[in-house]
Length: 363
Image (cartoon, rainbow, N blue to C red; front, top):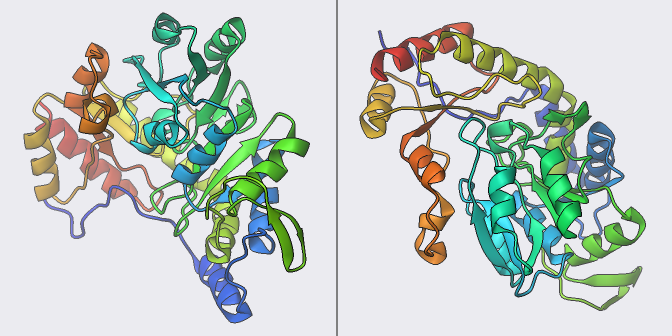
């Protein structure tokens, strides 16, 4: 039986507080500031406190966060190791900064970067490891950190899916030198457009540099007088996004708890062998399964009122990034992966419907 309404893959969770916060910003006539004052500063402080980072700067997207973070590492003509199973911005951030993407295999059980595969592709040109916490499941940061220290290279995390994820009893955002987040409307913290970089090393010097770079390189500002001493971009967060982000952060733990409850049911009741593991440290941005006839499966799910997705087509298979690399695990997973909704707007009836349809059409 088809549900009365279509079940969305992603759906922001909002209430009156977001509307009140937007109205306040609208009425204030203070909608944006490159200096990052007002709600932007409040959001930065709140998010930094939540993840227990040393500092945080807010930007206008996860892509901007990656671009800025990698600009701090001098990767020009150097190699950066990353997974191919990610949104293309992960790789774009390397090219923006003159680096060379070096793709490594994923762990087929978690779909996160495989540390053994990373070690196999490290060369004398390697400058940085860029892991992605896929679907909210944390990477093996311990093993990756050991590799980074062993080879004298840096690590920046792509945590676009991982707002609220924990690793070793600490929130993602507090482990590596720099950690990049996305607050796209589909994310666990949903805003019209936003991102952040959390800082855990030398914040007294890194924070001013990043704040300058996110605002066109402006520095030494005194009232209306300022200097520009480096290249920067127009990447600062606006007040509307920050105000919404503050309210979203307040309900993040509650909403992630609901996502975990959905994931528990998927893990227990979906009959497929290949599915996302149960890890209650995950933020479960979405829940992935692997099916054989994906096109047919997704079509049948849609016809029965359920939106599904594909995350992602491997970056190394796209024209811009196509090389000679052959990543058999990534390529196999990419042919089968399907994303299921986990957002807290799902009712118990919605989750039951999704499980029944998955079990019906995936066999």
